[in-house]
Length: 405
Length: 83
Image (tube, rainbow over all chains, first blue to last red; front, side, top):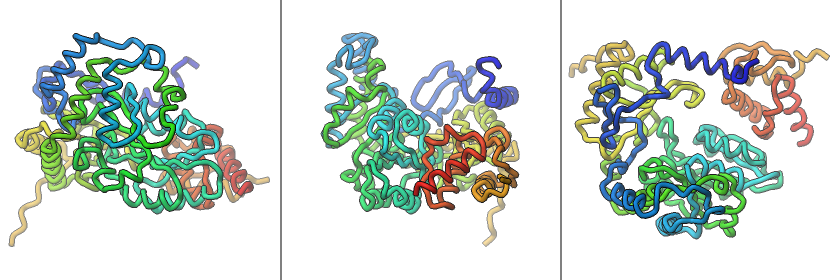
């Protein structure tokens, strides 16, 4: 057996998709010219699958501060913080995060993936328990796998089911850490966080909330779902990312847990990787200030999300259970999903093709994410293109005639 | 012992049918991934059904030792006997 033969099934599935279409897993942009527009094969394309919720990737202040940092501090740190030391920017960014969240401790990671990998493998250990929402992101599953705690899943967004599973563990020794996300990345559905907090308190568990897709999006000052529903005091650990609303790359955690600073010398995905480069840290700091001080960005984002969500729902697509900046439509099967995704790309609309097992309920999805930087005209153009393409391909039936009063 | 009539094995089959939405025929020797075409996510969902049926907790980190229906059924029996 050759070295990669164990992946034969995945290779065959991938080849089947590539033979019938453009490769959805390696789209190449000739250029990206704004948060909402790029060029693909010479065509101007509306970007609707970038998680760039506030459109800050091209913010002039973020760019300016990033450029200044690269000139003054260089292109990279070339090492980890425990071995090579921290730059002033790392310390300033952690101070800004502590201040923003009103928490005792903050730690910055090189990616959001590493933040989850590090936290889930280190916060709990042998004889402890991780209780994960079944639809958790791969980084949460991978972190759970890397550590030594026992791992239990509960049914997605189901506090009753969480209660039942915690009850089964009640008489087993060890700490229990419940892990949920603010907004789930595939369907854009929001966790019932108030109810989950109630269960967590009743059963004596800790709670970690991953606000990757909800930071900058929910809450009066953008701190995420916990702020939006007023339960921040009952969330023990908040994880987030810089690669969505903050427009750069990196991950973070904030917490009031006592002795949290020990994480810096026990958390391997923090210790054994190069720290974030100065340019990234600088733009992130500026973006964090904008997220806090510019609620208008959030208002614009939600208006755009509503425009797209209602538009797609009214066309007859099956959308997610609530309106959020992640707007996904379920496709009947993989063939039509791939066909539709290709046709949209050919017609100047880029969004994400999500295929099982990365999707809930094993359904293929066309997943889009809206930005505050989209204009209403762009959203209208997307809706018109989706409708035209879907009717041409037979994914949508002919429009219903208006009811006669 | 006829393993097909083992009640835990039969219950694994029922849980698989619920998750996969199709009839499955298994013995203890059935390889879950190869013979049932079950991916890691479907296996975790089957385990969830079994947790509810038996009212136990089956940690998913223990699934690395599970290849056949018999492996899963013995894991369940071990957990139930401990409870």
